[in-house]
Length: 98
Image (cartoon, rainbow, N blue to C red; front, side):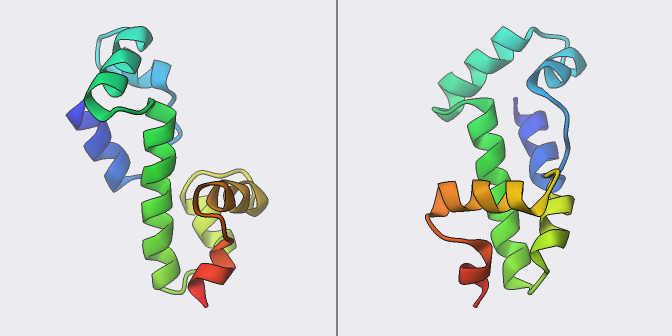
């Protein structure tokens, strides 16, 4: 699990699915999912969203535009990124960066 998490922290926009990570790690999706839950206390997808949020906060601090951040973090549209951001923080990226 550690190599996967390190890679996602260094490249939070990596679009590989849990199934893809499992295949690359020579394990099953179910095993990888259970490891995430037992070692992290949250699901793989939740961990990935939080990692993307942390990356987004850093990029917002550096005054990067929202559309650039959303593309860099692997979101299909800025509105998808904004929706995730609002769901996790209760505010919008623009409000945070002001």
